[in-house]
Image (cartoon, rainbow, N blue to C red; front, side):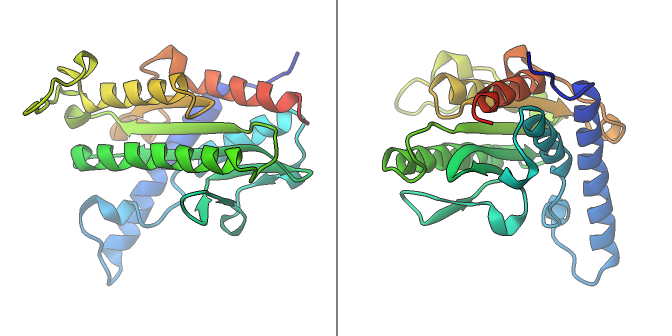
Length: 241
């Protein structure tokens, strides 16, 4: 039986702490510099916030027996061909012996603009999956079906946890969306990505900025836990090492 890296929960806590600490450091550097980005964008343009999660996924992939030479996280080596566009840059790619074994996307969102960003994030994730699977159908990656993973962390705050109204000027919205917060909508979204086979597995976690600096996070739904995600990833790769 495959052994995952020890103490996965601590690895996730470390990744969460790295995320918030990196955002804070980037904001402070922006404020001291001559060029200031507007609003929360100052913490977005610096990148690297989710590197802790990428390191965790890398260690899991290695635990599945995949060598370091097949795991790609460097920006210039993350492009995969698409069908509707030439290429798409993923956050982690596993390619071994000319076979695409896995591609992972790691995303996050903080306030205050949850509405527009929710639509952007969902459209981006669905479009990326459609593009990759269509390219796969057309033979871009061979006959072996790769693992496609989606990991998402949402800021836990009042704006993300309170119910949001929906507009229904012509047709009724699906009942599961009535009275839901953005946190619940992201949970539903991640679950449906897997149910509809757009992604092989998805993880969804939330974290409050104040406590997240110390690594605190929550798992709103067990079927979308990081532990389940890395187990799925590891099991997929174990037979392909």
